[in-house]
Amino acid sequence: MPDQHHQATPSSLVGVSYVMPVLNDVTHVRAAVESILAQDYDGPVEVLIALGPSIDGTAELVADLAERHPDVRVLENEVGSTPAGLNIGIRAARHPVVVRVDSHSMLPTDYARIAVETLERTGADNVGGIMDARGETSFERAVALAYTTRVGLGGSAFHVGGAEGPADTVYLGVFRRSALERVGLFDETIKRGQDWELNRRLRETGGTVWFTPALGVTYRPRSTVERLARQMFSTGLWRGELARRFPASNGLRYFVPPVMVLGVLLGILVGIGGIVQAAMDFAPWLLVGFAVPAVYALFVVVATFVYARGRGARTAAWFLVVLPCIHVSWGIGFVLGYLSLTSNIAKHTGR
Picture 1 (cartoon, rainbow, N blue to C red):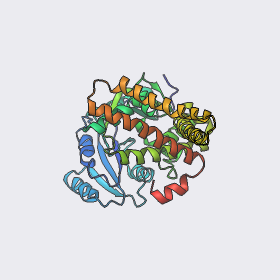
Picture 2: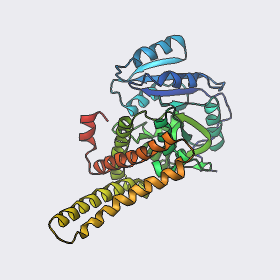
Picture 3: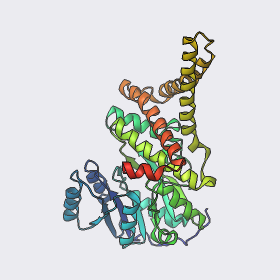
Picture 4: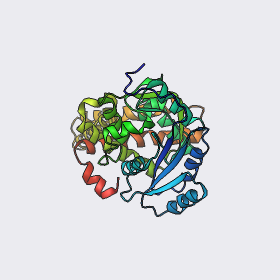
């Protein structure tokens, strides 16, 4: 059992507030909200949608949902960022348990019930489970596969599963609102990775973050290479910023993609030097630099054979593209974030 920062409460009918930031996501919002409304939890509930400035029909869609369902409220999020939207929803929440929901996610019907039971049983400040990525197209299935394998996003328990117990962070999260208020809510200066940073503060103030594989949330991956690359670049950018701000709290796995990117880039530059040597009739020993990108390419091919075998030729072919897209985009972003360039890049890209 973890050290209990709170005494477990006996009632299973504690009120639950679902908080979901939304920005230009008309494709997925309805399914996400419907999964909330389909919960089998018997306690009082409310659904708080923090709507950022949207131009794709999302505003009209969530307004319609609020009109049809009395438990749904739409809150204005002028800033538009995820942490700002989360804080707006938390401050407006009426109930003592806050369930964070992503517009790309769909909750299983027993999600809130299991989460509240786990909060009560463990006394944790936050409980969460697995990001169960599932795609509909061949490309999305390849992305989902990369998310759920150790060669894709590093093998965190909330991606690949694991034993129940205390964790550094979890996917989304079901929080005691009092714990969120204790640590000052989400840090709005952190546009990505704000969950990890908040969970760090919960743990530093004596609370427990609890992972349980009994909680699984269906997640819809990005649908194109461009969108995936932008997502991974932004995620890596802020992960680099967090690694710089909190150097003692970062595992070595966060540094693997940037080291790979720098190694491949250096190898290519050295290899080009070998080509120049050959053109000038010198011994082209610098061609050995091409061994680095060649080894990485071999790694991608082997990983595709191991993980994508039997999942269809199109999915396997996309996996060959998806894996380096994730690694390179995330790695470049991490390097730039670690070099304190996050603010300037975010200002110009909106990330």
